[in-house]
Amino acid sequence: MEKRELNQIIQDLKAKRDALSLAHEELKCENDNWNKCVIIVSLTTGMFESMKLQMRWNNSVVLLVPIALSSIIAMISALIKFKNFPNQMEIILQSQSLITHTLNVARNEETISPSLLTQYHESLEKLETSIYPDMRKKYMKASHLNLISIYKQEKKFYNEIDNINKATLEFSDDSSSGSSNPTRMDLHHEENIL
Image 1: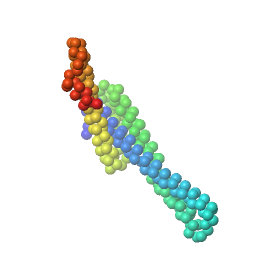
Image 2: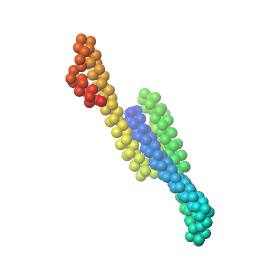
Image 3: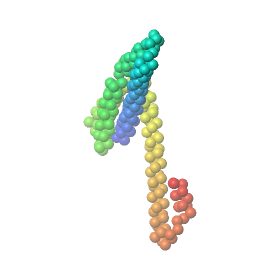
Image 4: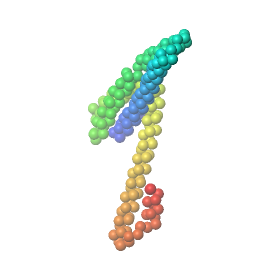
C-alpha cells in the first residue's frame, strides 16, 4: 500500500521496527535455550565423571555414559552452528537500526521529502531481505495487534486525564464560589478512577 502522508510512513516504520524486534527476541530466546541445553548437558557430564571416580564405577555401561553425553553436546553445538543464530540476529539488528534511523528522520520532517522517501524505500528493502516472507507475516501481524493495543490504551489514558482535569476545574470553580463540599457526582467520578 502506497503511503501518501507522513503520519502513515511513521506508523508503518513503527510497525516494521516492532516486527523486527519480535523476530530478534524469538531468535535470541531460541539461541539461549539451545545454549542452556549445552550448559546443562556439560554440567551433567562433569557431575557423572566425578561420581564415577568417587564411586569407582568401572563397568562398560558406565564408561559409555560420558561418551554419549559428549556426543549430545557435540550434536547440539553443531545444530547451533548450523542454525547460525548470531548472523541472523545481526542482520535483523542492522535492519532495525536502519528503520529506527528512518523513523527519526520522518519524525523531524514536516512533509514527505524525496530523501525521506529514498530512506523509507531502503528500509523496506532491508526489512524484506532480513527475514523470510512467512516469518515477516507472522511478526507484522503481532506487531500490528500490539500497536493497536498500545494506541487504545493511550487513548483511554488521555481521556481519563482529560476527565480528571475537567473535574479539577469544576471543583476549583465550586470552591471559588464559596462551596467547599464536592458534589456527589465528583466523588463518584474520583472513586471510579481509583
